[in-house]
Each structure stands twice: as structure tokens, then as C-alpha cells.
Image 1 (cartoon, rainbow, N blue to C red):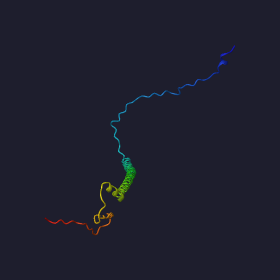
Image 2: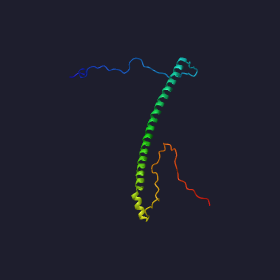
Image 3: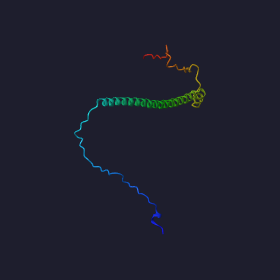
Image 4: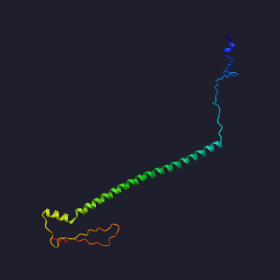
Length: 151
């Protein structure tokens, strides 16, 4: 016969309760009559900290403003360079077109198609095709004038 002692060895159960129970009671505390004592040292420290923080903020914002302005000006410079390059290209195309339109062979061909004749001696007046630079001053220039007799 098997005894009860041989089936399970004796084990001791551990309890979750150790010592005396703790009981908490809520107690209303009225702090309305308390007055905060001003600490001048702590107040001065907080003012100094605020001023230092404000200076740091101003420095960081100045740096950020300069950085973003530099980026903005870089974009503006690149836009203006692209615009200038486009205008230089248009100017080159217009000069090329002007040169082809002023070609004497082309003008002679168009004049013959329109039935015009070659000019007689004294009918041709050569125009000065070289334009003076705007930067160089002109000392004197002569322009032909026509005098109309009074009637």
C-alpha cells in the first residue's frame, strides 16, 4: 500500500503577505493660506538664464536668416545669369539677322525684282556704320542741315 507521504514530498507554501498591512487614508490639506517666500538669488539666476537664452535665440535666428538669404540670393543670381545668357543669345541671333538683311547682294536682288535701277553717280551717300561707344565722349560732330528759302 502506498502511503500519502510517498506521493508528494512536503512543500511549504509561500505567502504574498509579509508583515503588517499598509492602509492609506486621504487627508485634505488646505494650502490656500501659504505664502511663497521670494528667493532673490534664484530670481536673479532665472533672469540671467532668460537673458542668456534670449541672446542665444537671437544669434541662432540671425545665423539662420543670413543662411537663408544667401541661398535666396544664390537662386536669384542663377536666374539672372540664365536670363542674361538667353538675352545674349537673342542679341547674337538679331545681329546675325541684321547682317543677313543688310547684305548688298540681297538688297540688289530685291531691288531688281521690284524693278528699281542702279543708282547714278552722286545718288549714293555712304553712312557711317560704326557706332561710337556710349562710354567714349564725342568732342564734336557735324550733321548736315538743309536751308529752306523763305517765300
